[in-house]
Length: 303
Length: 310
Image (cartoon, rainbow over all chains, first blue to last red):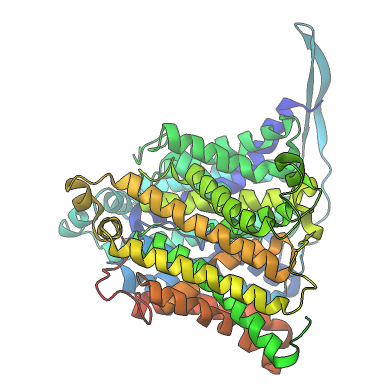
């Protein structure tokens, strides 16, 4: 029998990886009005840059991660100033197709540089500490209460919650953040009131790429493997989180990330399904949300 | 292959594959080129058709247990496979599309991405059905027959001609004009009293059914199916073919399918590419998508009246 508490805790840890990517994807959606299919590759880029700086250059892991995030921010700015700036008037589906092109370019460059074979940071293994281990009988059923926690999973959860708080403060307490919310709500009105929407668009790419890179590093740290498809493999979960929260709402994306991730862990309880279809759970939740509440939890609202 | 060998056999095989890509490209062009619907599941619908065919061609497999003996395994199974592949892909397309067609266009993109991943997982995990990662043999009744390559070419070309003519008639009809209207301005089309959601559903389902039929053809052609043949990269190879040939033009999509087969096969004969071939191919594809969408969104033979996207 699997411990439900353990599943919820695992979901919380995975949700903390997803929330980092989902906030950025949602910001891009709200401000640029397009679904960024290159978001998964931005995660992968972050994971591989950290591998380069930590493994090959030999910097301390945290410093390598921070520098990779900085490089990813620069990549985000480059994508916006070099490419997306020519497509401000393009339809959302044209933009979507262009991000697919960006995804292909990034993934192929990663494969050319690092090949397709899986890599790892080679960090020491962390063993779970059992903090709870008992069985209680409730109404004739045995309920397993067991929970294993490690410094690693706690660190991941802390990173997720800190980043979400940081994004919240950025959006509410800084001039740029407020300008981003205004642009998302009404682009042309923001423009006539003097908001530099070009600056806002580029900043959004910078923030989204930085968060995605952080997500990629944390994902690689958590799973222990780095491979060229790693970001694309979680992209569906990230999209599901954004759709569940309500497209364009970063707060919805935060809630959506945790809800989807916990639901994903609990899917192993369904008999005959097992962990092989974890990814399909994200898809099913998304379809159900789209059927009954297409505007999502927050319905595109920002607060 | 009995009868024909060497360069001629290779040419026949390339032309057959080209006809299959052109069929896929026509299906996608109905969805994207004429109606403005984004489909990330091209390879998944193609795969459903291919695996349906492989199951029907087993003389005593699952399909035989469901349909009864006599229908599966022999040459009769080929026309049956074409019909059922189209039907099953079409039904699957309706299941994906119904929840999202009322919403903004990019929801369909996200939903089809989810569908494609789910199909990939099923093909990998359900070994009893699909053979899993180790693949599935197609028990083709054409294998070992004299001139089997020519037979497959004739079948694929025949299907392509039928699909092309049906689509051309459809697009020239009032039905086709409604689709183009949806692509250009859905609200205006709705204001004219057209049930745009229903038209979008028809376009999406018919396009996906065509992809399923192309699945039957590829199953007969490659004779061994692995899930990797139907991963999302293949979806975008078909996209590239259609975008190159021309969006919103059946002729363009047809040419695009044959351009794709050239694009995928020529680098094979450039020795310097060697091991990085697959990676470089992806790079070229990515650059092509961006360049096409930036400078020539209608492709080489596309609809000049097409305003960008929808």
